[in-house]
Amino acid sequence: MNDLGTPDEPYDLIGLGFGPSNVALAIAAQEIAPDRRCLFLERSPDTRWHEGMLIDGTRMQISFLKDLVSLRNLASPFTFLQYEKAKGRLEKFVNLAEFRPSRLEFQDYLRWVAAQFADMVRYGSAVRAVTPVRDDDGALSLFRVSATDTATGEAVEYHARNVVHALGGVPRVPEAVTLGPNVVHSSAFLPTVPRTYTDHDREWEFAVVGDGQSAGEIAHYFLDHYRNARVHLILPGYSLRATDNNPFANEQYFEANADDFYSRGEEDRRVSGASLRTTNYGVVEEGFLDDLYRLAYADEVRGRTRLLVHGGSRVTSSEAEGEGIRIGVESRFGSETSVLRADGMVLATGYRRRLDPEMYRDVLPYLKTDGDSRPVVSREHRVRATAELTCGLYVQGFAEATHGLGDTLLSLLPFRSKQIITAIAKDGGSQARAFSPARRDGGPDAATLAELIDRCGSGTLVSAGPREFPVATRLPLVLDRDRGRNGVLFGVLDRTDPQLRLLDGGKVLAVFQPDGASAGEPLSIDVRGCARLVTDRDRLVAHEARVGPVPRPGGSVGIEIEIEALSGRFPLSPEPRAARAESESEK
Ligand code: NAP
Image 1 (cartoon, rainbow, N blue to C red):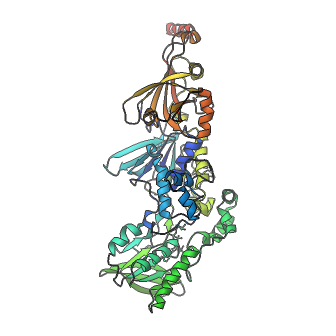
Image 2 (tube, protein in one colour; image 1 turned 90 degrees about the vertical axis):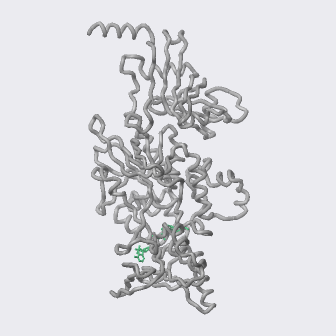
């Protein structure tokens, strides 16, 4: 049997990145289309979320109810409240009466969810290229994803019918500014700045560029951690502005409004997007602005000014000067450019969203783009392509122009992941070409074999496990022929069964032997597939009832096997054998 991810057995989807967007997708895949085979590639050694900005004490700007799944499925085992319960903090969290958890805790929640999908993720995999692969019919029906193992430097390749790109934005850096030890983007703030400026009493001169939440938090950090430092806040507007967080404006981030946004004309979308900008970009949360102002005011009381706001200004250049830097600042209110000297500068200048032209070099010629060279994305977040490219490229967070400002935010993740996985499941995933359901040698066809499996009731399951020795068990299995291309087998195991660990995510071979009376001559049916554990209680109860009332003291867990290939090893009845003999004699 080939390994999953080869051209013959491609994944249904490969997700690039395993941050919030693709973790939400993994949840949706398990809950909506568990028969789809997914792999996620993540460059970091674990799931991270804006780690460079996880400043102590900073909080989420949205409610914990806008986690990865609650708004789509409140009963999901992956909600933020389930996380609190699992960590033993639920009552204490309720006691906090806090809708907005700390960012640190939200990252911990993300990691808790991500850990439950560990068998689908290759951490330490840096994706280098996504390349379309031509099949025998001339269509580009598969993607080859090439990656490098960051620990060993080894090159790896996987194939998939769909790629879901969720690698986030890239730091926006002004043209004539070069990043270096004294000039960093906010995304690298915590890993670099505290290490570079270790003397907390020195009279540092820091420059912070930008007027968004990142700029506000970094300016506050400098004033708070370096008691003699001065902070130059260089921002394009007149002053800092508060986030428009009013509930009416926030309704724009509802699922229905995102749909409505998509259905509007281009000019209408542009105007709406611009008018909503202050709900998210270039603004600082109101309570935080008050804190920052109080901190600056306390200095005034002590007779010194440490926060200097340079309104209407843009940083245009920077160059090293001695141990510090020389910063070129252009005023918006005239053509003059001034120079500012500082010991360090942090660019809180936001992010750009674009598909890496190098990574997608061989795919870009097939993608449809708009007047601004942005990929055109369908409602389901699939990038529109020429007819030749039949495999699907989906993007998360790259369609603000057509899907609205919520596209880069957490609010809509539960819905977007559902749209994507539903589209991929409908599309047929890799099943469309991976296996021929019928044997080519005139043996029993797939429908006949499935009927016989139905009658068998139980099969011997042999699992290779992901990297373990084989294990065999006889297990009652029911066949759900409405799902998957050839059907899905379902069984129930005791939750404490040690085989669960080996079966979950592993390739399995199920062997069925219908009794001679019902099938004529002896027949052995081999079912090849990939096993997956099911923890959704409702589905488990419904299926368990069909499998039969088996007492399970430690609770039970469902196991599903998407049938990838079926074959019967002996002739079904004398008729096919006779038919074959005739055709042979004709030669
Ligand atoms: P942002 O909101 O995009 O703000 C960046 C600002 O920098 C823009 O207003 C931009 O102005 C300005 N800028 C760009 N180049 C400049 C230059 N050369 N000179 C002066 N100003 C320049 O970026 P952000 O603050 O990093 O926020 C990004 C997202 O992360 C937002 O959704 C934010 O809410 C989120 N965030 C959340 C938290 C939290 O939850 N606690 C913390 C930080 C960030 P122009 O557009 O005019 O160029």
